[in-house]
Image 1: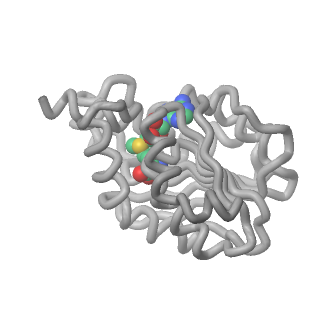
Image 2 (image 1 turned 120 degrees about the horizontal axis):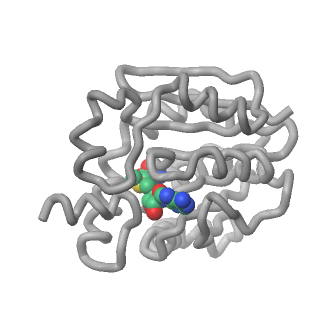
Length: 203
Ligand SMILES: C[S@@+](CC[C@H](N)C(=O)[O-])C[C@H]1O[C@@H](n2cnc3c(N)ncnc32)[C@H](O)[C@@H]1O
């Protein structure tokens, strides 16, 4: 039963399990959001993309900081998109927020669009090489891509990779290599306990 519930972390479904998991993630990922927001530079960003937006809580927090920016959420789960739009309904009405259903491997956005791209607790489920190349495409020259994870030690995270189908945990060094392959440069790491923030620049 627990195994079934946790499959919703990979792709929240429309069942009650999916809704519970979205609410749990919005609350449970607060330490990662707090950590990430210390390192993500939102100054002067006009358009921000949050990939794998889940329940949309980090979008709500970034909207409060980047008051001039428009923030777009992308997720391949319809349940995630619905929750993100409900949680950010005021910003949606004000034209400051959008959320789009889609896969990170092939995003419905034009080339060189976003100043800041964030990915919180989601790269575990990606086809990383293809996805990072696609993130590079939609990032604006001078823009940055930020990957944030609570789990970055494959051994410590084994209980999760055994429970959740298709989940892979990457070290910060592996994420750096994937970013370099996608052509990101000036790659930096920030860490707090097992939490990591890896960021790369599109020159
Ligand atoms: C563990 S949840 C994290 C949600 C949110 N970022 C947070 O921090 O609470 C992972 C999210 O990434 C989404 N996701 C996973 N793989 C994806 C892909 N290939 N394309 C788009 N979204 C994806 C899932 O649907 C899910 O909503």
